[in-house]
Structure formats: C-alpha cells, structure tokens
Length: 294
Image 1 (cartoon, one colour):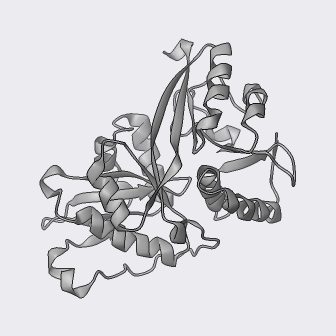
Image 2: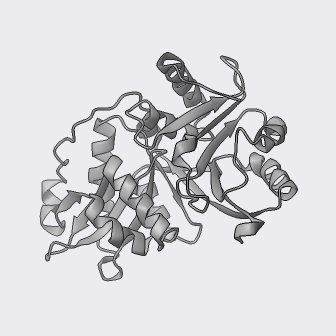
C-alpha cells in the first residue's frame, strides 16, 4: 500500500469509487473532504494505481498521537478483493496495532480478515453492525463551495409549527457529546468539537433558544450524533432538520448518508419518508483495543 498524493489522481479515484456506492461510501466521503481543504489531515492509501483493489483512508501519523483516542485513530476501508485484505491489514506501515483504533466500512466481507489479524496481535475487537441509509440523488456529488448559504426555508404552510433552525458550532459540543451514544467522554468531546469546527451541523431551538434536536456531519460525510430531547419527540423536529439541512447539503453538492440502529424504527420511517433507501451492505465498525489497554 502507498499514499496517493496527487490531486488529479484523487479526483480520478473519487469518481471511480462512485461506481461502488454504497459499499465505498466511507472512503468516498472521506476523499470528498480530503479534496476540500482536508480539515482532519487525512491521507489515502491504495494497493496499486490505476488498477487498485483496495483503498484505505486514515489520519496522517502526526494526528494519531493519543494511543487511546479511537475517535481520531479511525480507518475507512473499501476493497474489491476481501480475500487479500488480511495481508494488507497485518502490515504495521498500514495500521498501527499498538494503539486503540477503529475501522469503519460498508462491507461485512472484511470482518474475517480484521478478526484474524487482531487475534494474531492480541487485540480485542468490539463489532457494531447497523443499518445504512442512502439517498441516491444526494449522495453522488462532485463539487463543494466554501461559504454557507442562507438556510433553506420550510414550506410557508408549516412555518408556524417549526422552531427556528441554526447551524451548530463548537459551543454546542458539550450538549451533543452528552447525548451521543458513542460519546460521553473527554476524547469524544474533543472529536465532536473538531467536527463542529470543520463540518456543518444543524439543529432547531426551543422558545428559550436552546437546541432541542440536532445532527452533525463528520470526516467521512456521514451524518451522525442525531438526537432530539425527549419532551420534543414526535413533533417533526428531526423532519424539519432533514428537510432544511438536506436541502443545504444538496445545494452545496456535499454527499451524505446515515446509519441507524435496528431498533430505531421511528427514525427509519422518517428517513424513508425523505426517500432514503436501506442499503443491503450495512454499516460496520470494528473497535480494536490492544490487550494492554483492556
């Protein structure tokens, strides 16, 4: 595996990966952000060029200083040859198995290779599999713009029923982190702050001006951390976010997608009402922890 630097090659790779959506979504979205200022200081590895079989995105080495920060130490994987993945993953120049990290992807076929290499290196694996939802007309976008457009207005007939919407910033990180199922710790707080500093997040406010519902984009263009305060659930707030934020991302030509736990049936219904479809490949995460940190 080697790092792909040239902007022209990254453009060609990005367009090529579009053919493999949804399985390639995690690397596809990450490369979108790498090509747009690369705020998380990521890099792209391929096994060959131009006839690649594997693509891995990861932070550059200087970013992965904290051996316990799996939020930062995140690898995204797409492969056309899962049978060859084990040898690649075992290479210390590709993945640092001495620290805690996570691998995310949309291919269950990589599971066996990850587990085999982890076992050989005495690394514990915690696996999560959820439902992946994509919106075909919005996920395949090629360009972006730097300035934030005026928020898209909701249908005037519904205006009185909607709370005001805002773009989120780093001052909201504590609230979001506290309600994020994957968060609630100091390292996740740092990660949420970084996402809000570099990627769009959107929420709605109650009459007192406090956020009551929100969602945030992360470094692979996935929309995550979605939450609504219990007393405001069932009132269409997440629908409003989906409508306004989705329109904003669409007009900015930013790809996006989501994963949802299998037991979140109301969220799944809301996504389907927007035209999202369930992707059979699923969303997968492997958190890998060396035994010395368990």
